[in-house]
Image: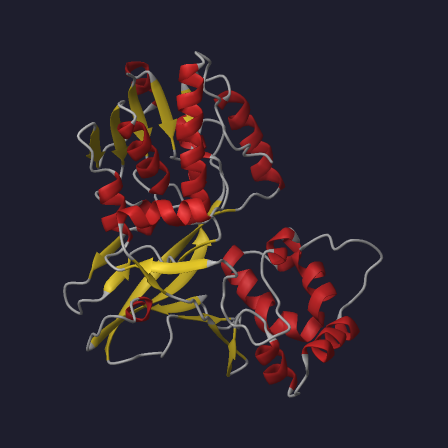
Length: 383
């Protein structure tokens, strides 16, 4: 069987290690951090006892039955519905935009049909399809709702005005003409009782899998393996020799309090005058637990530097052009496959990461059986 290297011990790498390890291959997993689970890493706070999402909140949600059944083999998931609140103009509202938000903001008692008619009335109609985030928002909801909930928040999150961002970003955010304030529309939603790190640890717990933490895997080491699966940054694989792909990163400022600090897991701060984008209170991500103390984190978004943790790929024109160069070179790398959020330079949720890792493992088995080469990408990063 093959000797395989996997770069990255997040969900992409861990699921792949589990599947290929079960298939009988010898697996070495490398991660530069001192822990597994990547940005999903959770840890129990020594002082308060609260389970902390170390790199920001992660709520598991999916409508993919296969993924839901698969991940629950490695840990118990507790029901959790993400009900985000937003503060704008000195008032608290419900997110995503729903009938309660609209009625609160407008000071009305619209029915669903009346709210839709209101949106049609205030929406600004241009001569063609909306070309950017701002035009899409103005087209959908008009200037007042856009200014209150999206203009400032978007500028803080992305470090640029909404007019510089693609319209597709807003298209991913729901607007509901009913009172449903569930942030996600997925069939299955929850958070693991023991945290995400416990699940990833179990995924990696096979005799045929060796995990190397605090260890950087370089391109030069690839020759020692039959195949390499890289879920690390695609530009870093080539030493960023053509330039670094652009990401936004997050700074977290911790505060410790007693009792219940904000009464909700996540509150967004939409006003541009407030420097942070949101505050998360982590005890609310585990409502089945009881803690006297509480820990909150204020999030600040900024451009990712070389030493920072990348969170959100920017994927504007310049970044896509640079990505195309790296993708063309990656396709020439022998016995190397890129996957995951960093390996394909896409913002994807946990359930998508898991589904794609399962697909990669299946594809590897099929190509080995057919004595064919494994493709460099199972999902096209440029698509």
